[in-house]
Each structure stands twice: as structure tokens, then as C-alpha cells.
Amino acid sequence: MAQDAEHPGCPLEAVHKRLEDLHRQWHLAADAYFDPEGFRIAIQSAIQTARTVTFILQSNKRAFSNFDAWYAPWQEKFKADALMRWMVEARNKIEKQGDLEANSVVRAELVASYFSNEVPKIEVPAALFDAPTALVKGIPSTALGDHIRREGVVRIQRRWVENSLPDYELLDAVAVAYGRLSDMLSNAHVALGLQVPETKDTRTGEIYGDEFREGRLPCMIGHGEMRSIDVRLADGHPVELVEIERVIERRDAKEISKRYDFDPEQMFGDGSIESALSGLYATARKMFLKDGYHVNMVMMFRGEKPVDLRQLVFEDQGQKYLMMRRLANEVVRRGADAVIMIGEIWSATFDPDKPYRFARDAPERREALIATLIRKCGEPIQLVSTIERKGKQLDLGKVVEVRDGAQAMFAPIYEAWRREIPKEWAEAFQRKKS
Image (cartoon, rainbow, N blue to C red):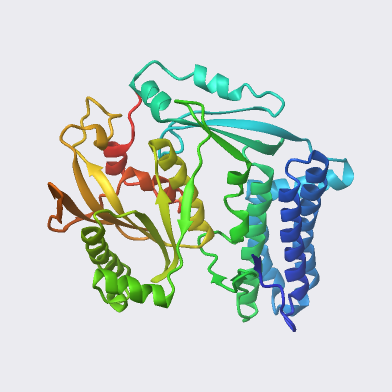
């Protein structure tokens, strides 16, 4: 995927080409991640290229009627940005002093929550693979510790980190810098009265919005998944995540609508996202009553347009934790601003004396069919129907609408959107350390 660099006649064509050079070098570094020499050469070349983007922009200042007035705020913005200052310093060091002091480290992280800051992370040199052991030894003998040992996953991830930029993985650092340079270039087009360049999937031709990726290309997001190994604490077995992307053709829609007796033209309502939630849930009720079950389906929207449909398969709680993190990456990658998830759940009243007990383990648990809408701007909405079983017969209770009451499992998506989770959700759902 790339930002369209073919701009015949565009006065900033040379800047486009240099930004595309940076994009290509980023991928060379990603491909060489486990080859220290190859990674060193590629990532340092990318850092040097990033610095030349602004040089080439300044060399084309004659295209602007008042370049200095436009460029000065961007200079100040980048000077105030610790990462962008580091990019300048790193380029100077590479060219005048030698190589960066990059080190390969292993990050071991306990994943036992939907909240990213609830369980510890540690990093050690890549040659020392006792990081997981150190984490496991640190699990407390408490209710929280029991929960972690039973449901938790150890995520082991290789990372390249530069000594003077310890809070960033190097590929992430360059990707974020790319995004900020891309935002500047887009703004330059606005200043010149030109059409803002589009982000296009070179395989499908689909055009993506940049507003939620902060200028980064879709292929630069979530790359850490490829460098991770996930292992269950309970049995030491690797965790495999299963997602099934769905593409519904027109002929499929006709067959589905005939089987479940609904009009596919009405499935998304009148076009609004809340109407889509109602229409999709009405369809889900019909499918459940016909088949006796409903799989976990997720649909992403950009504006009011669906951009992705996939089925999620959960076998245990650890998979859910990991899957929702992966889903958050996909939401950002596709520039989605709303998500609808539909599936079956267990529900039960929260017991403060048993904060780590899941609804499925509560004696008074109830089954329900639920559809949840969350969005970057706006309150979440849930539609819930109790599943009623009488022998082999199934029925669904009336539809209950709940506003501003989404589940904690959506925390990774809110975090990816950089949206604060409402205080009352955290108080009700976040696991309490004891």
C-alpha cells in the first residue's frame, strides 16, 4: 500500500518521490528484521532519507507564494516533537559519527486483560531468553495472580531499540516520522490549492482516509504481530488466532436473504450507523432463530460505509485478549471510525467479592444475543436479547437497548483511537489488583 506518488505536473512531485523512497526503505528494514546487518543498513538509510524530505521541500519553495510563513509553524512543531528532533540527531550521527547504537531486545509481556497497562512488561537483550521466566516468577499469589496463571498469555516479541530512543521500537519510530512528514506534505497541497494526495491500496485500488493513522500507511501498522510468539501460561502451548475475512457477493446475499427471509437492501437501514446497527441486529436475530447459533462477527465502518467484515473464533479468554488487540490494529489500518460486533455472550451480575470470575462461571448466568456499536465519536450502543431455551426449542426475548455501556473488551480499540474509556466503565469492568 502506498501514497500515490504519480503526480505529473505537481510542483511537489520530487517530494512525493522522496517520501515514497522512505516507504520502500521502511519495508526493506522490515524484511531484514532478523538480519542484524541488513536491518542496520536499511533502517539507517530510511532515517537519512526522512531528513531529505524537508530539504527537497525547501528546494521547491518557489512553488509557494509565501513559503516562509507556511513552513515556519511546521518547523516549530517538529522542533517541539521529541521524535522528530531525534530523527534529525540520528541522521547527523549516522553521517558524521557512524552507526546508531541499536540493540535487539526481547520484550516479554503478560497479556491477561483488555487493558494494556494492567500487567507488567520487561525487556532484556535478545541473547537472554529468560524474560518469560522472570515475568512468571513475578506473578503474585493473589486473586489477580490466579487469574493470570489460568487465563494469561506470555507474548514474546523481538524489538530493535536505539539507546537514545528507548521508548520506541525503531520501525515504529520511522513509521510515525513518515506519518508526520506525510501530514506536512498533505498540508502543503492545501496551501497550494492542490488536491490532497490519496492513500491507495496498490493491490485492490481501494482508497483509504488518513485521519486515524496520522499519515502512516496501512502497511506500517501492526507489524509487531509478525515478530511475536504467544504462549499460554496454563499449558505452555502456542496460541493460534483464527480470523475469517468475509466477502459477500451479490449472489451470496440473495441466497442468504432467501434462507433467512429478509431483504438485503434493508440490512443496513437508512444509511446511518445507528440504523445499520438496528438492521444488522434484526438480521442476526433471524439467523439465530433459524440456525440455533450465531458466530462472532465484526464489521468495520468508515463514515457510514462498511470497509471490513470478519468472523472471530475464540476458544479461550487468552485468545480474546490477543484478538481484540489485533482487531484494534485493523481498525486503525483501515481508517475505521465505527465497529459493530454481533455474537452470543454469557451475562451475569458483577460480584465485587469475585472480581476475576467470568460471567460464564456464575451460577445465575444467562445467555444473550448482543450487538455492540462503538465509535470514535459518539456513545456506544448495545442491543441485547436474552436467549430462552425450552428443551430443543429456542426463542429470543425482547430487544433491550443500552447506551453508554459497552464492554471492557473494546478497550484496545478505544486506546488505538486515543479515546479515553469512560471512568464508569473502568470502575465497573477493569480488573482490580488485590
